[in-house]
Image 1 (cartoon, protein in one colour):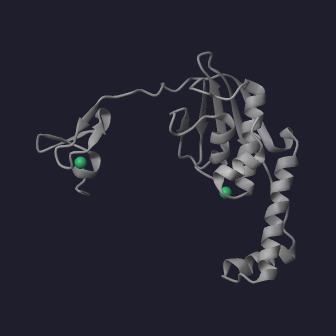
Image 2 (cartoon, rainbow, N blue to C red):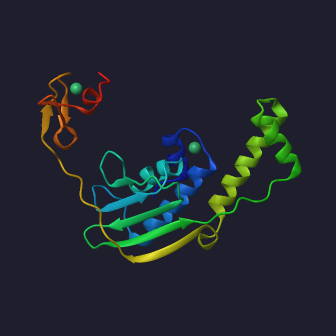
Image 3 (tube, protein in one colour):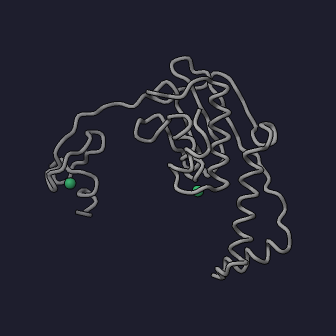
Length: 194
Ligand SMILES: [Zn+2]
Ligand SMILES: [Zn+2]
């Protein structure tokens, strides 16, 4: 099982969003079983925040393999479905950040106004570290609202033939090709960006 450190290494920094994605992913694997080496597990993420990097590292559902599907809903909801059974789990993150102290509010305000003095940075950093810790140590039921059951599987990633763009000469996957003045072209050439 991947550790939080592994996720930080991939993502580049530690942050509350990453911690949430880590908890979601660990929980999903605990419920559904092993990490996806190929496409036996599919993740559908409803945001493109830091959390999604944790999902990729921990569950093995990645953008490149096509078993990470992004729906731009701006919601902290993550669905994991096993192939071919369709057994799935939908996880909605329901975490309330603890109330900020007046001191924290004041410092955050100064930070947002561009004050990066040592005392401001220390408070902002401590607050972030506190949040990360709370998320990593919260009970599952304090953090995650879970639904389980059979779910509809998205289509499997397909491999398409590629065509050559008549304008730039670069290869383009067939379903993305467009026709412009009777010639096969890529989308940037079609839109006149090349
Ligand atoms: Zn982050
Ligand atoms: Zn082109």
